[in-house]
View 1 (spheres, rainbow, N blue to C red):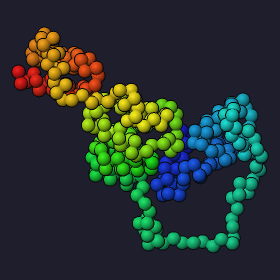
View 2: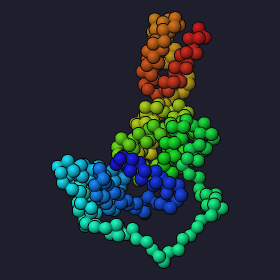
View 3: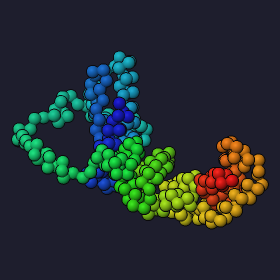
View 4: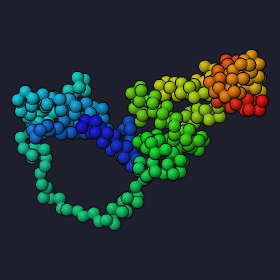
Length: 308
């Protein structure tokens, strides 16, 4: 299917990236594809660049040939090109025989046998590939299989993740990259390989998140600003006054005040009504003007209730 063709090209490009034989921004990968329906003639679509275009070209060609066959017409054996502007294919030249495709025996090229020993030597010299790296991430960093595979679908992302593990929790890094960063990139239909992701900037943001200096919601907002506009995360958070920088003593005083002002929810919480906890956390957040970490507040409230 067109989707499978695109997925194959994605995987092929990823392999080439891991082998360090393809450089984004410098190299161009184009593909020729052949479409033949119900045993009719084969049509070749030449030199399609961009994997989305490959999927679109094949989808259009399948639809075009289907309409011809359904109307009783024959499909011509030919080479066609893909027009990116109107998302259609147009005829370039006809092909009458297999020789037109270049399928010709070459007598001057002698057979070359590659021994198993030579193949094994080549395999040993190869860099770590996506499948092997994914398994290592699961074993070394305790990642879930899904997160490890998503990271290793991109050399850029897997390299960034491994660098981040030097400064932040591997699991926090994995979840944030696969859920938030990739989510932003995919939602805005960006190309991951063309998106600037500096290890230092991402690390700074994740360290703030790990230390409870920024909420998950605001960390995501900082990530959006960074991915879309290259605004340094910490600079954005400081400018928007979103850093959670209250002292522990200030949070404790706010909790004490909320407890005194809301005796019934406190009593309900002590009686086992968990929904009262959310109310009290919200009241403390209001008292601190959103400058405290909600998880930290929740833990403090739970500890205070147990102590009483």
